[in-house]
Image 1 (cartoon, helix red, strand yellow):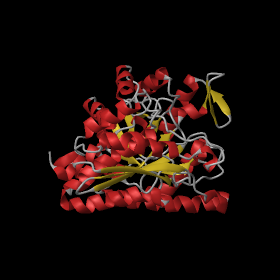
Image 2 (cartoon, rainbow, N blue to C red):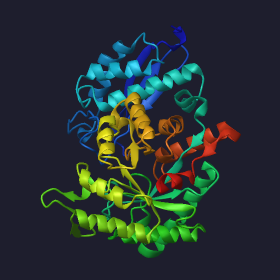
Image 3 (cartoon, rainbow, N blue to C red):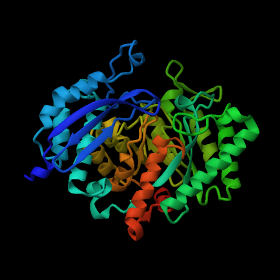
Length: 432
């Protein structure tokens, strides 16, 4: 065993996320390196994801503090990891799961476990003296993902009446990540002008993920505004740039009536499928994420069948970055795309197994941030290291979002002539 990689110290600290809520940062030190990782937090959560442990005292951060999670790292995790080789990621992640001992990581806290797992990964990378994406993916890690930019926020991410949670632009028709990012930024700026013209200055207030939160009533208003912004920026919708949607179906589902509420009207399953088909007919839609609630397997399967060869049906709440849930979804032909959120799984190893399963079955993977995020830019490296064709990390605004984009620019620069942009290859996956 090489002493340079032995874990010498594990510590934790309560810090703040992008919403001003407390979250946990874990630091792991070896003789030669240090890894720090901050756990993100979602506003729209699946009940199947790893449990985020919070203190619940209404007098302290209105119940949102994470001091119990911090103490759990210090009391239970730190002694168990001391003396282990930081490169033994799978062994360490299994140990974290065993220490917790619950199926949903609710005792130690999924937030404590996620931050520790990623901090170990970073410490090993730093100790080896290689960038994190190279440590994760080796020499084959050279493909830059397509950015999916949430530039109009709705649902749980905003204070407007838009039913769908995210309206994204996806710049695919470019030769490099940096050119794709530039196009996305230009469209974002033109959208800002359009919203000011149509709705006034208040329309350019930002939602949780840096997108605008205009006082729109209809999803078609948002789609028309995106289409106009792409046109004003000088790009071709359905050529160089596409639109993607995150519906967050669980958030608009009314369990009592068994219907979905969109634009003030109720729709049953058939009505929602008709709505999606109309949107795909009228706009250049690349993907639809969580079109139905997280247990509506029939809805997912029917939409996959209807959209075959036309658009990606992405599972987020349905899958919760859980390999077993992905297996069941694959058996039912319920998805053609899978969102990847490490904190949903709880550990890096579990997320990696999920990505590998999806890749083996031809499912498109999308690395993703959370609405409550931080300056931690690990997912930029994980997207390249794991080889996910796309990355969701919000609008090109707010430093917790741009930190990921900037890190991808650094990775592209580091790779120089070796870098490849996934780009238009994504259209070949859809056409299969």
